[in-house]
Image (cartoon, rainbow, N blue to C red; front, side):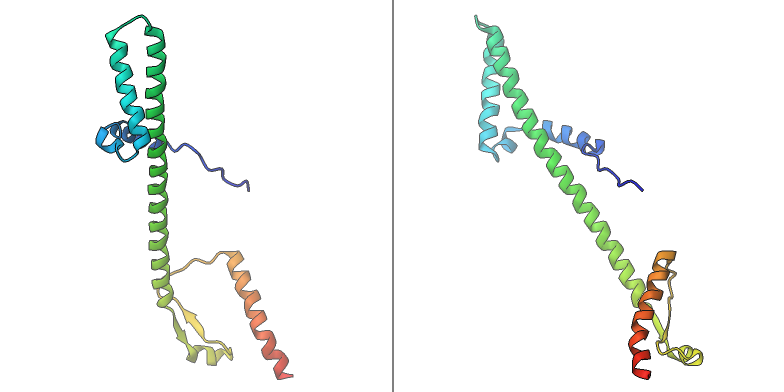
Length: 158
């Protein structure tokens, strides 16, 4: 079976990042990052100079576009990182919830020593109240572990 490749661009995260990148253009938000705030102020000033007109229109256009691209790309990159962090946190919360549910299921195991004594088994049988599916690999692993646990008992008995 081939290992699954992780996608770099999850479109749900990208869509939210684009929206957040535009929302981060608010100057109050940008003040949290002083360098990008200065770049944004420079973008606004060059945009005003561009619309005012003048002899260096192409130069002003190029500078204005580069400054706005820098601001938007930085906001987008920051929003992508935040989106991935939120997605990872949600995954960890789901894993914690699943682990808690499994722990509660395993706590419901009851030893049945009287049934084990009838069969002559030195280890008590365990009965699960909630069903847990065991695949074939896990069943074989359990058999190997049981054999390893019983081996010292056989050696002592000789």
